[in-house]
Image 1 (tube, rainbow, N blue to C red):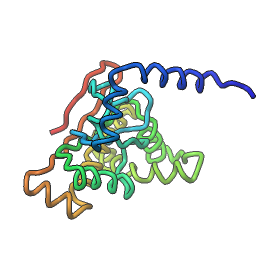
Image 2: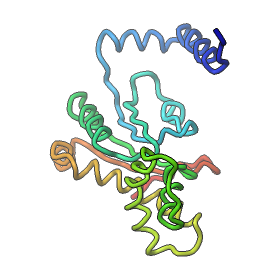
Image 3: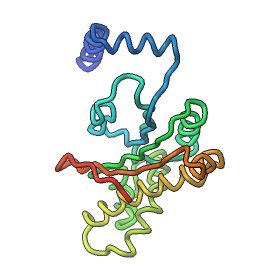
Length: 195
């Protein structure tokens, strides 16, 4: 059987993890149950790792990752679980510059360039309303459209969380739940919070 270098690295990494204090945290959470403090909805891009970016320990973040940080029915259900069953009071929608999913949606909207698979096309369609909203205002360069669409896509996901779930809307109205958005600039490693 051939050994895949990436699998070997992952296995070695887990063996090292078992020697850290985080192992005891994991075991404690397994016994006592999880108590995350923040829900983070972010892109599946390997460069955007909330646990590392926010210096979080095992169990502190309830992370939902999907390309383009879109919030569809499954993501919304996960957010509801964390907010309602685990009483997590804060949800952060975290986008990032140079997002491939948002870029694919911009290409589709501006150049009629279709994604290569039906699944990707479905994802791009979820982002497309954000792109459509900003292209009316920005007709200059694709980079401007991409930046604006990235921000608008975060806003769109925040809006879905705030309006598509009666239970979350109720918690928001009572001040028991907050939804915040931000975009990481990959070039500067800055996090810009949205108003």
